[in-house]
Length: 379
Ligand SMILES: [Mn+2]
Image 1 (cartoon, rainbow, N blue to C red):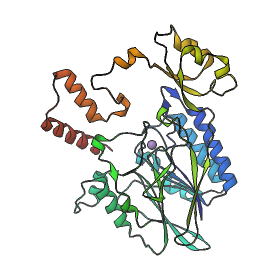
Image 2 (cartoon, protein in one colour; image 1 turned 180 degrees about the vertical axis):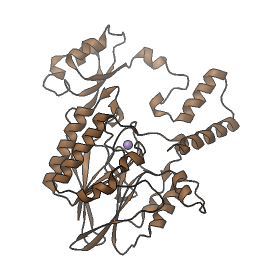
Image 3 (cartoon, protein in one colour; image 1 turned 120 degrees about the vertical axis):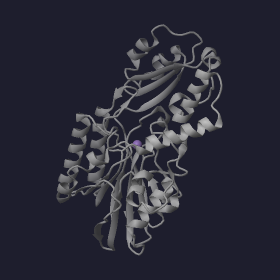
Image 4 (tube, rainbow, N blue to C red; image 1 turned 90 degrees about the vertical axis):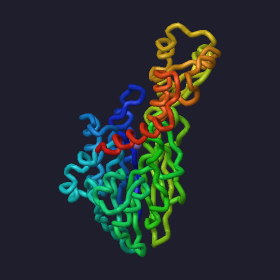
């Protein structure tokens, strides 16, 4: 049985204030082309379908078109919601669409009914577990002590009653301990959202979403396929792909990737204004259309650099300088940029600037608890 594993489409996402709709439409067409070539038995969509819980009309139209085209190709599609999605909105119409081969995971209520698929080796049980927080699982199992994401997932998996003698595939959306992250994922407070890989032991393959770089965690068959597009400059060196998984008899799982080529690449360039505007450098490259982050190394600011560089690099997304001035002009704590800090670090920094002294350990603990309570309580 052959699946194509996708996740984190983030339809409707804007990167550095720039709409990616055209790029997303293009890459979905590329994916459809790969699906046609690979002729799998199903498509696994492991969450973060949209970028926002209230997706834009354009994003909804993109997904609608994608699902219709897959369905018309005779493909089965299995969709779960991620942390960026509204579980209720992604689940809308799911029971109606099943007849067309589009399975939308219902909102988690403590039960997951497997979808049974048959091939020459027997049955494959496919389990769709949308993104859940400990509070959701606790709500369904009030007698269980659930204090962490690992507890929550272990409880949810145990309740499934997986028969390990059959072949089982799980589609889910979580941060598994040890996965390497990048800037376009959401950072949780104090890094408490990680799940131990051992909770997935009963499954032959775990199709994960959430982490944006393709990788496996713990064993090759617990895998993030990654985003189809680069959604932050920290991903400039990623090679995006779709993952193709083939299950033979029990114990035989083959995994490979098919590269995805975007309409426009997202790249980082560095040099002096003169170097970067030298035709021998940019001529003949695709940088003219790519999304670029330019770091100028000139010691003096170049007047109207953005406007002038955009004549060559029309999709210049970000410009900064790396010179003596920027290197000596460090932020109060230095190190990571605002995007790389978690909310608690940002609050601590704000507190220090406001009060001229760091938070006490007690204040820090209180702030962390409050943040966890507030964020975990969100739908
Ligand atoms: Mn994501």
